[in-house]
Length: 234
Image (tube, rainbow, N blue to C red; front, side, top):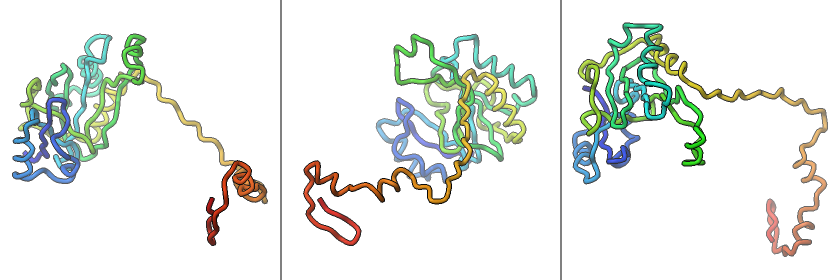
């Protein structure tokens, strides 16, 4: 079908190195080595160029607590286009989430589209975690575990019916996902360029001119052992 395929283990990690397959699909011998490996338990598609510009929207329903995330996402898409669903292959993942597959002439790297803050209970369980991702893409530089890996199943069409969508239709999908985002991104304020007056020195340049570095080191017990044209040795 023109996909770049890799084997995955029980934790959805690739069996061996996989980034080479972002540029080309694996050959027959490479596939045999991957799938005969004792840890191989699943199958994944490398998204992006080597799979014909495949991109996937990954909807993580377990992180959503206000109704059905998949339904809300579908409703947001339908507000702009009701025909777009007919072009998507949709599958359910092992965790109960959903994957929407399509190809497009314009795709991007993996990106988070919708996130939410952690609850107080979640913060206590994992203090290092900052946010929960609700919807993200798998595109250039990514891969996605697929059926017939145990726990994954198609719920609308399959890969034999995968279609290309227009860049405008892709934007509809991404905008619908972003409408469910509840994390406010911090805006970076650009400070105006500071103009220096003639003869101005930075603190480091000023210290290099006036500071006695060698004397300071010797004061604290360092012993001078030699010099070259560019360096002083202690």
